[in-house]
Length: 238
Image (cartoon, rainbow, N blue to C red; front, side, top):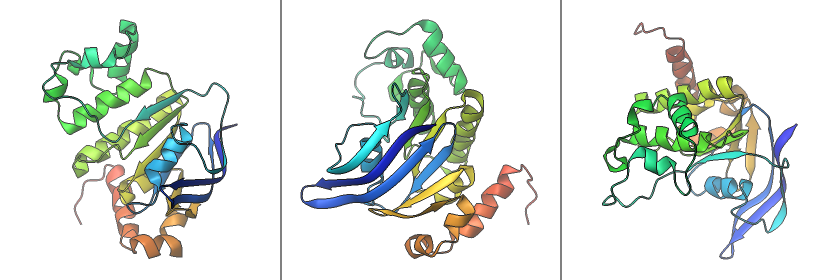
């Protein structure tokens, strides 16, 4: 059963073609990553998927009643506004305590309930944003460059959390990222975007595709192996 199906998507903004002839299908429970250079239309594609951007041509179909959890790239909060995590999770309207508390626990941030949003680290903010997205009990979690500004261990930890959530909750995950090696290893399928779909497939297939190498060079193969190696918790240094 496909959760989101995109056919022949074209998006034009201010006379510029941002996306053209994009076909995409996301099935229940899979982890799909979209990679591409800056300006390749990744965020626009996500916005089209959640219905925030109208296609100029083609179609975006969601499974009826699809529950989406969206984790934005950045949080724009007024730093002078005192607001703790609990209050943030209860905007725009209050939710049952069990829901926000459960969501914080799922992302390992239950200790942050009373912390001020303005005082959180980047990694903590990401977890709170993730908790917020999970309160909707999503069938698909959509993450836009969710680890921007996190260091390497921080983003690796975040991706491990994402994989954990997928196995716990069974939701599909769609990520946009520029951190190729980390993301590739965590994905079932990678879609390489540059205004159109250049190539897609398993991480191994995409990493060795000529279109991918033309965009990103060949350096990521080694990084992919390195990440897999780290992932196996084998900490001998060669």
